[in-house]
Image (cartoon, rainbow, N blue to C red; front, side, top):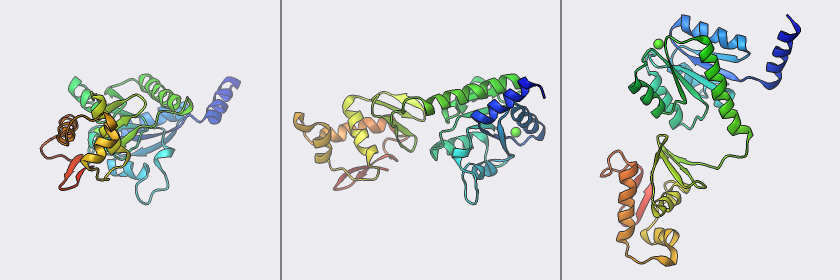
Length: 251
Ligand code: CA
């Protein structure tokens, strides 16, 4: 081993390039990707189906936890649960490591769906190994940048909803949704204490305070607007539920 190679190995050991979970059922692709990433200095975990991947990411009976994995490379066409459903489930469970989808499906629609369910990047097969490695490095740099930079604003999450209190922004499945200031304050109130029931008077008191110039119906109208923005079926809400005789609750 040359001194340059040795320096590179020592460097990768020192900084810890990170552990990559490769979820792919095709042996040849899985082995090729794993080997290439291992040669770059990544630590590799492999899974040939979604259930194994879930266990490696902190499922029951597993020693590993999601914090051990820095990046997930995920094939879409897997036996049993497919890659899109796995990706959606991982995000639903709050796993926030970068996910790079690999797929033979390279159409724009598939790409968009992949990103909508919470993937960070998408690479269509066939792909070059250098491009894959470059994208892995970029994803890790971005996530490390978040981790080692200034503390990130705490983002409040419930289901597919994410609310950033400092930036006053709301996201549904990663897509920003426009909220008026009052709608934002109402959602912030609810998301801060999921399942707590808030009466209309309590909501008015917290959101409008002394400025309030309306009646209780104002709250109902705002709740309806929020439902129209967040609920798949606003007449059958899964997030902002009515608690008859009391008020509303989230979840
Ligand atoms: Ca496959």
